Image (cartoon, rainbow, N blue to C red; front, side, top):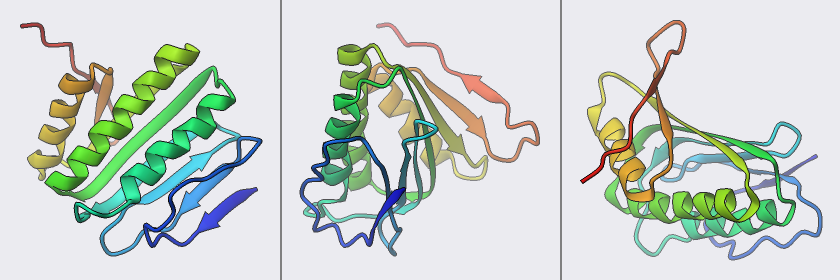
Length: 158
């Protein structure tokens, strides 16, 4: 059921007539990407230390076209990074903007969870910045809490 593609970031488009699951294996510099069509769950996890010319984020951003074609009623997204660099933040910004388009264009109920390690404030700060820039409701989850309590962040208004 899953399309399993070894990630060398050379994939430019993924064209499929029917929405299918997709799994991109992690590399030393790119996170694991998993889209599970049966559960309508998308996740990015691991290390994200990409170079500017790397096609990883444009590739997964383009994959959202495939998801949008099926007009899902809901989509759950989990972002769980161990390492996140500035170039990755830029790629994530465009990815999240595309998810917001999906929400707007299809009326998809979008749940975005950003998993945080209390010892790494940078990853949470990047998540907060993206939350503000994209205007998506992002739930921040403390990885160390046994109950995995969700912390909702209200929208900042200036």
